Amino acid sequence: MRLEDYWGVGPKTRELLAESLGVEAAIDAIERGDVRALTDAGLPRGRATRVLRHAHGGAAMDLLATPDARDVYKSILDIAGGYAVTADARDRIRVLTPLSDREAMEARLDDVLTARDTWADLPEVDREAVLAAFEDYDSGGGRRAAVEAALALKETGVDSGVFAPLADLDAGTLEDAAAALAGLGESGVGEGADDRLDGLRKQLGAVEDMAATPGQVVERVGEGVRGTEELRDAFAREVTDETGVDAARVREAMATDAADARAFVGETLRSLSDDLRTAVDEREREVREELEGTLEEAEESVEQAVSAVDGVAFDVSLARFALAFELTRPTLVDRDVTAVADARNLFLVDAGEKTQPVTYAVGDHDLAVPRATVPPRHRVAVLTGANSGGKTTLLETLCQVQLLAQMGLPVPASAAEVGPVDAVVFHRRHASFNAGVLESTLRSVVPPLSEGGRTLMLVDEFEAITEPGSAADLLHGLVTLTVDSDALGVFVTHLADDLEPLPEEARVDGIFAEGLTPALELDVDYQPRFGTVGRSTPEFIVSRLVADATDRAERASYETLAEAVGESAVQRTLADARWQS
Image (cartoon, one colour):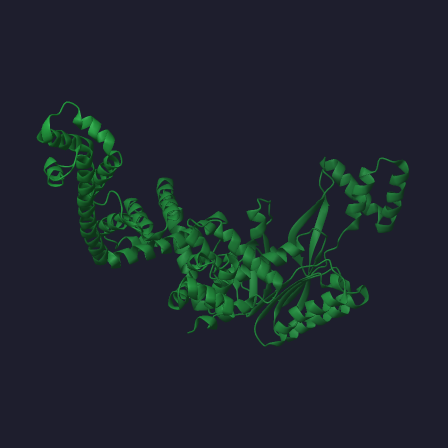
């Protein structure tokens, strides 16, 4: 395969990768999903991520049929990436894509849930040791850091479940490899790799320091000496004391025909430096050959360590994500269904907001829930109810569950049944009202229904983007098209009364405001009631305005509105609020 055959690799990107990595190495990095290699080559992280998602996700990325569905997908990965234990694991999470078949989804679910259970069972002290090992690995990077991380992980004694790949690694071989990798730096054999080499280097440095100031050496050794032999003896002692070089080696380097003491000292030190430099080079060559031989023998173990550490880091990262949000395994089925019991919105939980678990379904589900909360088995639901009642949040939650399940990841619900679909059409309410927005929205949400695949429609307040007179007709047509296409769908609207009669396969559900809180805020039951229209209950809003009014004339005006919406209902909600306070 050519480099330019990959999605997103145009002429400029190809040139950049070919120049930085080489064509074969760039192709290998794409095939391995190596974000770091591509970004190190100069490719922006966002583009590298998109290239790899398409390279590994392929047609499965078509599941994200709308920009809002893609936004949910990216946000899920951002949250999951926040639990990564290494930068590489975070990059691998960022390129996770929906999977194309149930077997692949089940296999990934098996891996993630095994990792979750292993991590959950670890004592806190072992968790801390594991995280410390990954932190050191992340700060070091490279094969040496991976080998040292493998050794540190083996020292914890954790070698089952997700850590099983570490059990077969030979600690002795890895220790030798770690020492060899530590010794073989980019600029040659590093300090600490060989005592003899370190000693020679130290001696060479000391001799070179003396050679830089020959006059001072002459002053120190020349005082009180008489004759050439005394000078030679004094000089040999000085050099040996200052540098640690053996006296015999010093004498072998002594000049024999120097004109005076300064020349003798300078020539001898230069000769001794040359001699030591040669010794250093020879010893470094010997040590390098020894270290390279050690690494060659340990190559397979090193590669196993790198693969094991990266794999465990990835699995532990997803395990931490699953535990943090109490995610559970969805039941993947061949039926047309998206059903959740006690589902929580992942984004709200991540933001630390209080959530009310919700049970909901469209399609032929088999949820085992209390009779009062068993959703009907209609393919399409029209969801109605109070403003700020959680309707859009429910759509988003269903989108999260569908995408997570098709990515082979657990979901934020006590139970879920998911039939894989070919397209998720999630459309949030947008505060724009013009012909262009309507046309672009229809071009986004309608084609998946006509392409013959399985589709999940999650459409929020479609009426907000067109004229009130035609909104109900268009929405009714969209619901009918969804039913006729054998798709699943949830449509949020305030126009339920105008949609009658609905197709037989569609139902109306409602979210209700129960009253006012002591703070005169709407008290909403976010669990939809099936088969009934949820009202926006303006009497609650008017009740709050009446209760808050301090000016007599203003209060009288709000009481006029109270009569219009139902004075008895307003008085009842006022009484409830005062009683609760």
